[in-house]
Length: 112
Length: 115
Image (cartoon, rainbow over all chains, first blue to last red; front, side):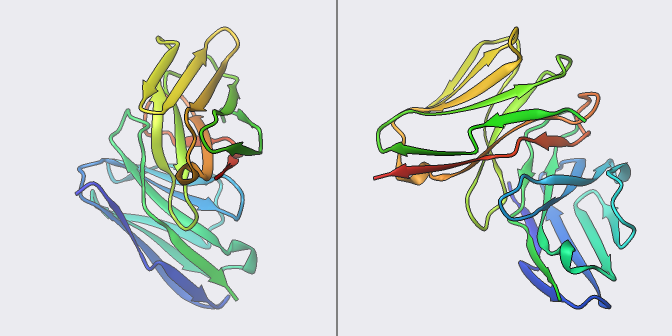
């Protein structure tokens, strides 16, 4: 299995909702990442997990809460989002010490 | 954070032509320079990457040229095909280069190959 699987593919949520994005990989990668990508912009790093521990938080607002339950799973919990948070949320994984990331296809999030 | 400056922002090339995208970086400490390709509705995919101990790497129609003294690296797509139409990003490590630091991406180049 050489894929990163993200669910759901599309999500519409209200500003008072709580939702979660899920990411899964079975390549044995011990580094996992969340990126945010707005239209016609590059991906922007949000969080880095290394060996299931949060190693980088790029000053992301607390309404985004990451979780890494095990070495194969990465979640992003969403609460009280704003319309400007609408974007494509990408998950990626890699072997530690290696920058050849494998990205998922992303979750297209719309906040209404 | 490492900055990478990518150009051009958009590029139109005729089928069969050579597409060239450039990227400049600042920090000489890093040792891995990848290019990613992204199609609409998909996540970026690693296309080709180079380490600074070589000046050129070729994989099929894709070539990276690396100029250490100028702190630049470029992507060349030979015999460009309509299926190459996509957005291309150069990238560089974000922090110490230790691996799990997160990549910083250039602004991207929207490439269109005209039939």
